[in-house]
Length: 285
Length: 261
Figure 1 (tube, rainbow over the protein chains, first blue to last red):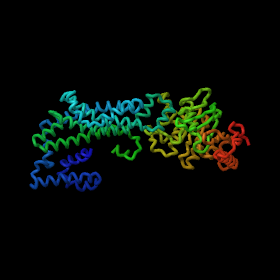
Figure 2 (cartoon, chains in turn cyan, green):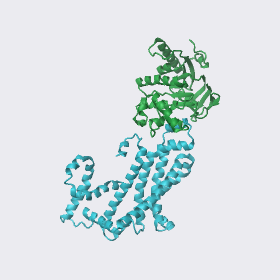
Figure 3 (cartoon, rainbow over the protein chains, first blue to last red):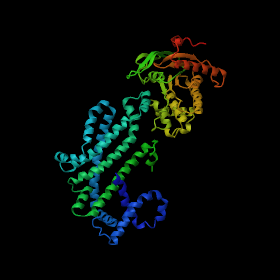
Figure 4 (cartoon, rainbow over the protein chains, first blue to last red):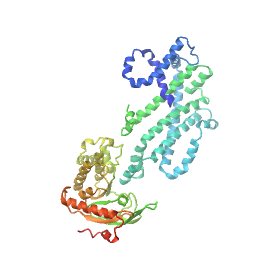
C-alpha cells in the first residue's frame, strides 16, 4: 500500500517538472498537499539534473523524462492500452469473484454461530497459506491461461472481504439490534434495515483492502506466464534490459490502483454520509 | 391492564436478579420503579418488553402473555439508540413500515412538530444534542401509539436542566393518548414528578419492597411542601430497602396494601 501512496506523486513529477518554478507561488498557498510532493518531485528533479549533467548515465535508473517518453511510445503504438485492458479485466473478474464469495461466506459465518464454528477454522487455515503457494496447483488445475490468473486474484481478494464482513457483522451494536427487535423486525427485515447499513462502513474498507490485494496478485499472476498485461511489461522489461519500461509499468500500476480505490470511495461516499467518525469528513474530500 | 404475576429471573450464570415480582398496572397509569443498583429494575423492564424471558411467572397485557416484543409495548432506553444512517424523520417513522408512505410522512411530521424538532427532520442523528436525540427516541416509541411505554432510565444521561424539561415534555406527550408509562429511574425527584405510584425495590435478589402512591395533582410543583413530603417518603423507603438489617416484618408492604399513611 505504501507503494501506491508514493507513486502517484512520482507520476505527477513528469507533469509538473516544467512548470514547477512558475507555479511556486501558487504552491505556497497549497502548502499542505504540496509538502507531500516536495520529496518525490525534488528527488526526480535531482536525478534528472544528475543524468543531464552527465554525473550518471541513467541506464539502470532512467530519469523521469525517459520514463515519460517510454510511456508515450507505448501509448502511441497502442500496446499500452492493450496491456492495461488485459490487466484491468483480470483484476475486475478476480475482484468480483472474490468479493461475491467473500461476502457470501463472511455473511454466513457472521450471522450463524454454527456455520462460523464449522467454517471459520478451515477458512483461517487456508488464509494462513501464502496465496502465491497456490500458483503451481492452479496452473495444473486450470491451465496457464486466464482462468488460473483470475482464480489467484480471487483468492487474494476473498480473505480480506470474508474477514471484514464477518467481523463487521459480529461487531454490530447489540443495542441497535435490540431496537430492531422491539419493532418486531423479521429476519430479512432485520438484515435489510439494521445489519446491512450497520456493516456498510466496514464493508467498504474490506472492499478497498481486497482491491489492493487484487492489484498485488495480478502482478504475481502475470509473472506466471502471460503474453500481455502490465505484469508482462515488467518481466519483458527485465529480460530485455529496459528499466524505463519497468518503471513506466510500475507508475501505471500506481495510477490504476489509486484510481480504482478512489472510485470505490466516491461510489460509496453517499451511502456513508451519516457516519460520525474521526475520519468521517475526509470521505467527502 | 398490564399484569405482572410473580415474575422472576435467574440468569444463566446463576445471578438471581429478580424474585416473585407482582403488580397490576391500569391503562394510563404512570408507575416509577426505583431502587439501588442491582435490584432488578432493568431486568423487570426487559421482561415486560419481551426482550428477555422471565424464568418464572408471567407478564400479561390485556390477557395476552408477553414472551416476545409486542406491538402494544414500546420501550425507550437510557441511550437514544437512534439509527445513525437514518435521518431524524426516518428514525421516528422506523416502526411505521406497514403504513403507506404518505400516512407515515404525515404521522412523522406531526410527531416532529409535537416534540419541537420540525426543523431537524432531515438532520442526521449525529447532529443532535443529547436532549434532542432522546426526544426523537420518545417520538419514535410513541408514534406507533403503544398501550404501554417502558422507559429505562431515559433521562439519566442528561444534565439537570434538560432532564426537567424532558420530564415535563414526556407528561405533555403522555396526555395526548394516555398510555401506561412504566419508568425505571435512579432519581427520586423524577419518580415523584411523574408517577402515580412509586414502586421501591430492594436488591439481592431484586423484589418489590414498598409501594408509595403519589396523589398529587398535575402539573406538580417541584417546590411545594407536599412534593418534598413525597420525596422524603420515597427516600426513606429507599434507605430502608438498602439496609440489610431491616426486619422482614417491615417489608409487609410487598403485599401492596400497606402504602397508606
